[in-house]
Image 1 (cartoon, rainbow, N blue to C red):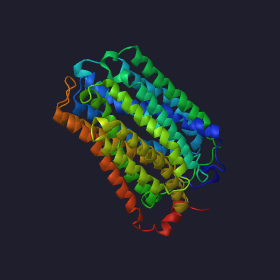
Image 2 (cartoon, rainbow, N blue to C red):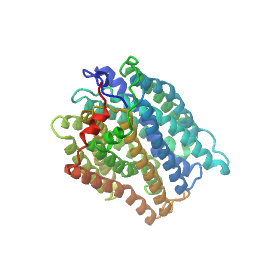
Image 3 (spheres, rainbow, N blue to C red):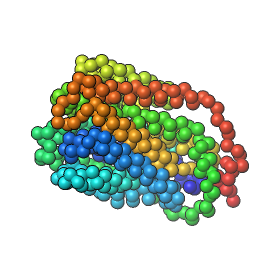
Image 4 (cartoon, rainbow, N blue to C red):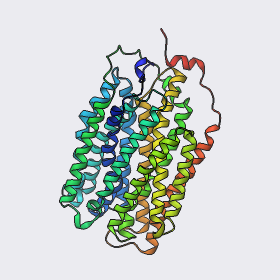
Length: 449
């Protein structure tokens, strides 16, 4: 934690080329994150022979571990005297490490049954540790580039644009992961290798595009722990964002996570998964300029409410049956683009709010706490999805019956609807007053000479 200095925010909007270079990191990150989110559980259940319940627990364990690493990393980064330089060094050093367990998970031969689960857990934990390091560094680097009014929304939109492009690439590669005829073939090898190389290349580009390393300054005298609590608990926008982020991470990703299983067990067409993921990615990409334009004339909370309504409507249309599925996926994607774009713009605003309120600018700790809540939500959602697959009778060796297929489809659309309703309720509660932080604690947060 350090007191606010002129170095903490950019004086002018970063150049477009630098913004694009930084945002490109989301392309590589989403290639790996989406592959793990959509295909890891499917790979573990279909090719590794792990039960759906155990696979769901492995996914949860990895995401929870990833989330728990984030606050520790954030605390270390916020104590650094040269934050921008440290963010860049971490991206350069840790990015190649992330690709090693990722490649092993999808390409190397499956171990003996007695070692399958321990080996899967070990690979997932190594991946998540290295990924958390890059994720915190990359996301926190954004806070160094969002000083001017409107820069946070624009940079968040560019990041999400690259995330959509990454999701589109993952959609195109779906057959290599879900089609048994292609399992372990050259197409899967090329797909996995290209994803790993793109991850390293784009994160190195993001590091090169970030703000130049700042001169090393004398370390700020140690600050009591109380101001950190005050900064977090007294920052109402930040606390509301954490609750909102957890709710959406718990519920919304279940929608896309179910596509591989619906394609195989309900639709009986592995190519359906690729079409569904492509529709989702394209709808998000097409709607992104609309959300950016809307951000110039509408409040962030109003945009979030509209986005959540689209998510709920899309999920409901998806539930009508095969004829409405693609239309429902498109509507869901349109709303999800607004939700995901605004989360990071709201985080930048919450960080600025905390600095104005206390005189202390935290960057890595708020980013880490948001990532913690997102990954805890995603992990618990993964475990719930694994439980739902087990209850539906998924075995991987035979198509689901009508009852089991109905349970799987219900899980796919009901969770996002619940998440949208909870999100709208959180937005409606934002007007509830909160107790002010005592002025003495505010002054303690940034001692003056």
